[in-house]
Image 1 (tube, rainbow, N blue to C red):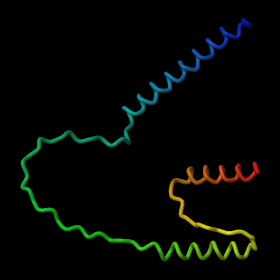
Image 2 (image 1 turned 60 degrees about the horizontal axis):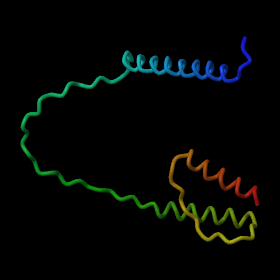
Image 3 (image 1 turned 135 degrees about the vertical axis):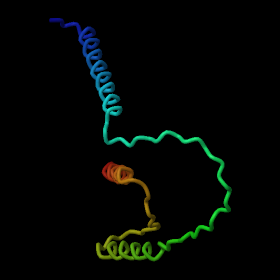
Image 4 (image 1 turned 45 degrees about the vertical axis):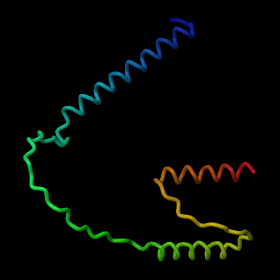
Length: 115
């Protein structure tokens, strides 16, 4: 048994990296023998094809302003019902994943708790 902290650090780090290396090999092995993986078909030799004119593609535009206005109206009604005395200058849609939105909300909450 040793009490030298440097030796204990080296032994522990060696064990950790060895286990990570074994897990990486296991992951790669499972990837190659996975029966549910889609097989890629071998590329066939390219045959000269007749060039056709591109067909006209119809682009459908979606009007989301009606939905956005309804959401803004609901938010304004909720603020009025709460009786908050404040001024809301901007209401914007925040795009992104749920992780991004949770990060933003956590940052706002932490900032509000600090002051």
